Amino acid sequence: MYSADELEQASRIVYAAMPPTPQYAWPLLHDETGCEVWVKHENHTPTGAFKVRGGLVHMRLRKERGQTNGVITATRGNHGQSIPFAATRLGIKSTIVCPIGNSPEKNAAMRALGAELIETGHDFDSAREAAMALAEERSLDFIPSFGRELVIGVSTYAHELFRAAGELDAVYVPIGMGSGIVGTIAARDMLGLRTRVIGVVASGANAMALSLAAGKPVSSNHATTFADGMAVRVVNPEAFAHIHRGAERIVTVGDDEIAEAVRLYFRCCHTIAEGAGAAPLAALLQEREAMRGKRVGVILSGGNIDQPKFAAVLAGQTPPP
Image: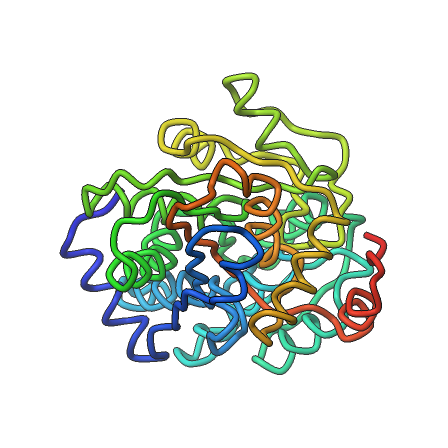
């Protein structure tokens, strides 16, 4: 996926803006799962999610290539924070398109980072189509949510995890558009590890699971889950090819399981996980018998959950999509 020189370049770009995030083996999670659980805390980045790494790398390389035109992208929030976080630092204008009814707190964060925010469409994929149309109309450069430079950037978290924890038996990674799991697969392969990379999707947004079962990209008719970072119904073919080749399997978790994992993170680690960030732990809990006694990583991809949803989860409820 990338060379050692490209990884070194990406690491310099990322660490100029943020320190590496921590990874801890939490004792209480061991008690809950029966295995040694290493949590990669991507909820500790400057935007509260792993996506910032890819935005930093992609925007810096764009600037170095002389591509200083305004950019536009679509998001449910974390990718949409990564792009303006990096673009504003480089003096490049950013426009972000999100669906109507998107997270108010993520929307506020994107505006605070300097983005022009446009709300349109009923879900991520319809917002993506609108962003592509606006790119042509306004002569802006459209940035997809999955791309090689984004993957190289986010892959730095997997290198940090593997350097700290060593060769794990398995790592659970949430899947939205796929940059996180593809970056994890690429890091594992570059380091020559035998770690099994296991993808996680929500039962209400299971297009990637359907695709792997079919052996080709398959779109679903809906993406219904409160874990908005995984609410995708159209599979990226390039991401699918890498996941099909390098992932062990995909685990499907329900929203009730994700909500329980959010509560478990708060109870055992006193840390905040958004739905997508908690999904890997939900998958491990589902498979705890098979993983008993093993060394397992879970990617806590982000902590950007709105206050009302978090309050509902802590009260024992599962928020609506």
